Image (cartoon, rainbow, N blue to C red):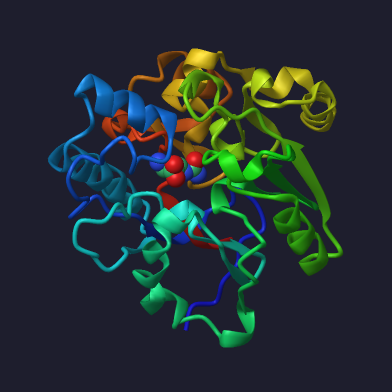
Length: 304
Ligand SMILES: NC(=O)NCCC[C@H](N)C(=O)O
């Protein structure tokens, strides 16, 4: 059995689900794509190849091996995108919460059923179809749970809005001892530079008291100010719309000291090293063309 334990974003990682790019399927049609960056790359003829994406995910896998982390991979579903494991389920404390994910991505959950079967059934949480959340929108931070959401009435038309207020309230009720803080995010179905697809696309803590943030990803300035007050302005690394588009906030912590980052994120990697972090660089830009990066493709099961 797997004894789940995740208390925050950065404690030493022991076990993780890492997605797979194997049998990713043909290039989606514009109608099949569900994020603006994929659409942009399909139109430009630059959609990533399976071969390149498999190589990138193996580079991440080898970092996990180096740090002796137990890695679970999804079972392969033929011709199906299974890269972004983060969104399909997530661990809070000792509970595995199964997301009600975008219907286009539903089969991804079946592929990790063998992992779910290793978890004590009383720890597995599911909910009704009207309650939406994806793991990319949910972050644990000390006594807080941060959740990205979208509050406008046109939620149903916004394919980039994945977590609704019913989802936020469900998590609030599940963890009455936590401070659940939701953030209304800026969304665009058509322009990836104006789209905070999930909370982890515009914000993520690193280390014990620092975070990467794109201010304009937050619809309300007060939400941004809340994070400034919590972390301290000197501890925030601000990223531009272009850096959000490159997914600078979607690095992945394997301990409070060690961050896995993309090899081209020079400005961020230099800052991280100056703060005393060990930065493990991997190539991940091809995966990034699908509007997800390192955090998005991992789902931690056990941290210290
Ligand atoms: N946590 C994340 O931001 N996940 C990235 C998911 C990207 C995928 N193309 C999607 O739109 O669902």
